[in-house]
Image 1: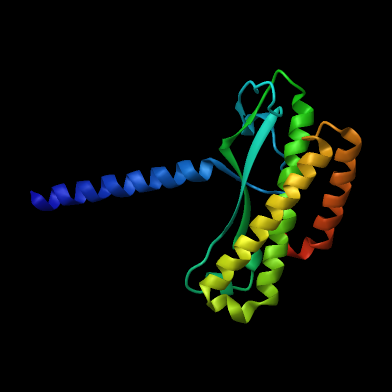
Image 2: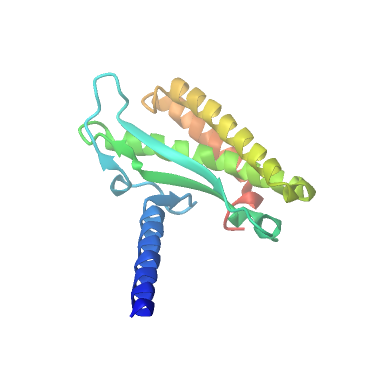
Length: 185
């Protein structure tokens, strides 16, 4: 009888862990050259008077452990993810402008993820030290944060259409220059 109870308890714990992993995965959307952010990816919220019309959270993560980062395709080990439960949009304002702005932010994050991937390839012998990878992650996450602030200020959170178009062109060029570090490669 004790064996049966132990097996059922173990199955319940495994099921709970799998459910949590599925929920976490469903909350994240990996960057894609072909799939753009949509209204359904955001929570709906009414912005306060001094708030922008949307907010999005992005995450630069990497899979490390054992020989994972030493594999032949490092591009699949470093991810740029949109965090659904930390992102919202105000549908009483210009939704298309907000989506365009947040997509450019996501694309800008991808530039820094690709730079991170490139740095890993360029420094493959140092990858054996996980602390080295942690330092690279911090470097590129901080660089993205600073650049995103610059983008936010110059485009007035995407409301300055001329500045927005300028930034979109710059981001596209930078993505093209780093295309060999795209996850699809």
